[in-house]
Length: 276
Ligand code: C2E
Ligand code: CA
Ligand code: CA
Ligand code: CA
Image 1 (cartoon, protein in one colour):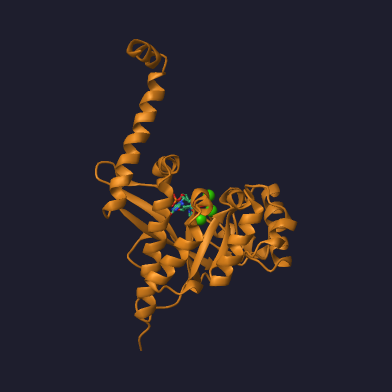
Image 2 (cartoon, helix red, strand yellow; image 1 turned 90 degrees about the vertical axis):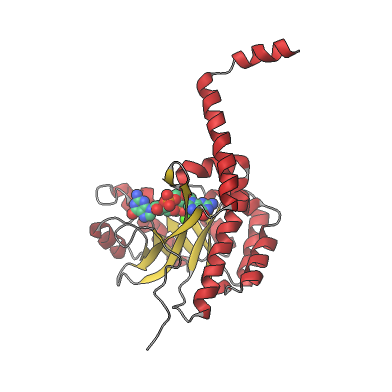
């Protein structure tokens, strides 16, 4: 009955209810934002640690909310994941990057690969491969310039289907990075089975590198393992030159972090057409 329904509501914690309605509102706004131009991309360089030359960019989403101003992913990705909107959002990001890549190539810009984050939900989406192929075909972006960043935990979820999907992505010519490496539980044997190009060492191992011997050991072990498996390594969250020096000494080839450049909201991360 109605009365019972009312009584039930009284059992809810008002704070919880507030949080739930906040998430619902954010979800509604995000749905609307997807239809307008409020979601934009910031690009952060990935550099060679020795020369500090840019070898790739990572695309990172930003939301210019009509009332709250600029929002970081941590402020809306949870709502996007909870509502499933993260899948549509992910394809939108992929489309935007591929359009940018195609235009840059057409104008004779430098050919620098761009990495896009794939959420676990998107990676498990039944139409994932189909959508990636559709977006590549529609935009005409060169697959070789597109890199997909997939988290370690997401890859471990269902190994058999993961291997099949990665094989197909590799066949198309995309590059694959394992994001946030070291925070999950993948084994060496497993990595050997997957057609992966790059390991991105999570920022949590880089942050205290200068004072934490344990973190240094972990990074050295990952770099040594990657070398044996012929994988590239990118250290995330490099903020100081001392960290850069340690990483170089460990044989880590590439890095990403505020030391080299913050994510920048730009139409296109590359310098203009190669002229003269
Ligand atoms: P991530 O993929 O690990 O991205 C790297 C994050 O580290 C970015 O945060 C970047 O701004 C930040 N970062 C880079 N260098 C430094 C540094 O030197 N110091 C510190 N403290 N931080 C640094 P951001 O842009 O806030 O993104 C956070 C997370 O949100 C990303 O972590 C990624 O998991 C997710 N994300 C961002 N864009 C997308 C997207 O388009 N799709 C999906 N599915 N997830 C995204
Ligand atoms: Ca990433
Ligand atoms: Ca990462
Ligand atoms: Ca991370």
